[in-house]
Image 1: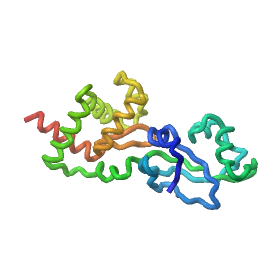
Image 2 (image 1 turned 180 degrees about the vertical axis):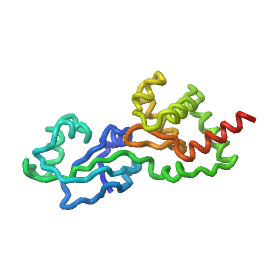
Image 3 (image 1 turned 30 degrees about the horizontal axis):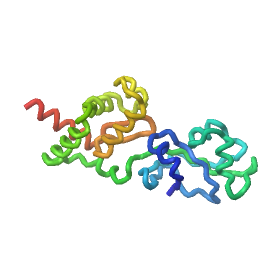
Image 4 (image 1 turned 90 degrees about the vertical axis):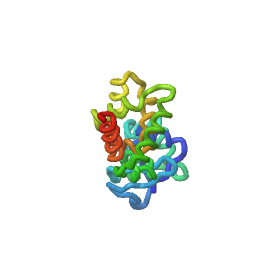
Length: 200
């Protein structure tokens, strides 16, 4: 498990934060591991290695959710001063879903009742502005493309677009990756059933 203060949660969920540093005596996570991080969901670890404090950069600080390297060093030094030669664990990761929704995304044996429930949920989302169909189509047509590019192609701002995609993910229709999204197995099954229904 990797713990984060509340102020980092939004960045972890949006994908803005993809790096952290820990003063562990030994590594507590491993590359490829999936770790639940309440309440934001699951974090998937991409790499783990040791680095010296003196090798940290401004870019590292930004990726870790800090405004500057100085701010990050002050945060890491709480309780015990840091020296340039001290070693930290450098952990790269990406948000791997909502945890309890990961299994749902893999369930592709949809009954008519499942399809009707998804239809109803999407209709509620479209009640003020129709966006679900075009968003699903954009993700289907351009898997693992940066959210900023998908949003621009739809004439939308990036952050509201990401918020909407998270709503689709909660239904199990999409999956998040380090860059961009894909239609999940459940989402593909749903779209296939919708397509067949329209052809009747």
